[in-house]
Length: 267
Image (cartoon, rainbow, N blue to C red; front, side):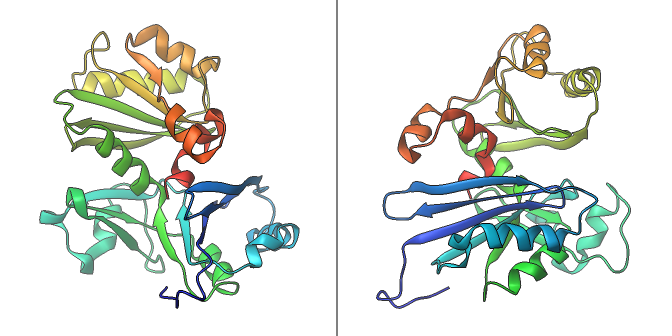
């Protein structure tokens, strides 16, 4: 969106959306600070459009003008493809190996130019369509593009394997890097503590990662007091929550909120 300088608001609006919830934040682009951020859960029995309508009614700030609007789709229906193997004319063929796809599905992709990677995903078209009724234009991406990019950024000049986990209440994404190389991306759905630790240790075993040596860092809805962190810490020696203290000070936001909304705040 190209605006005359007299029309610029120097504000950016970012959404993180899924059929089960919506989060948003407004960023002051001059100070790089968060003006406001909110999180809403959506009942799976509720019509998504009705839930979104209610959120918009409750938050008139969403009706203001913004220089940039980004919509992040929090979905695990995605896969990463190296640019050397990527053909944008056959997007569905990449995802069909990970989940069932239909002729009516709409496919999109994010290009991570720094890393020559493409993230193919199925966006939530009903959510995009609702937002198009409110905004002339916006960019949309898959949340895992942000997570993988940040993990690769953090791995710069780290010539050893690192494991990164984005923890959510019903699933977690896991990334393995080595000096800005993506060695693994996967998503696991879990219901119990035992599910979680099984999938985590299974990943370490399959990639021959030594749990006594290879570091694991968490972001997401987790803390050191969380039982899921505690069980990971029991089996993986070098296990920690990502240090976001400096970012929290810059954005003027509590560290626990930075971790929970890690992807939203890095949009």
